[in-house]
Image (cartoon, rainbow, N blue to C red; front, side, top):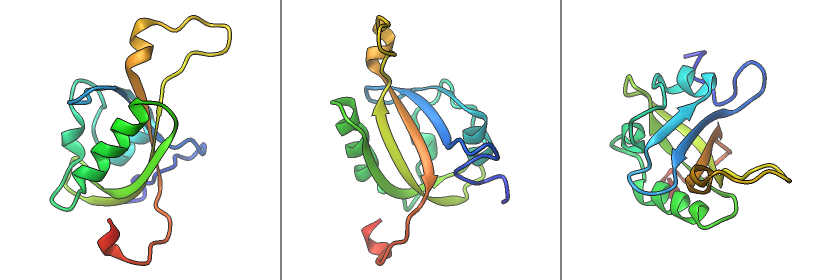
Length: 127
């Protein structure tokens, strides 16, 4: 359970890069994501993070909004490879090139997902 933190020991959040179109194929992840979820983050779709209490509509609308631009955030339950539910705050943004760099065609169609500790909630029904 100690490994299943939204932030690794160096302070970097768990991160996952995905294609910016359904079914949102996973392209790669950092070590913190792998430690938290138990998935390598490549070749699968985001459905492997869904469980019986995941608000898929909220998850998908947040990702779709980010694909159009900006940073979008939601809080929801996702599931590890072992089926353990995790309440997390998800930030989603487009992968952008650095100033002065030319974006590669593939970069135009990628999203970065950051999995952060959940913030205090008043009503569990909101999830």
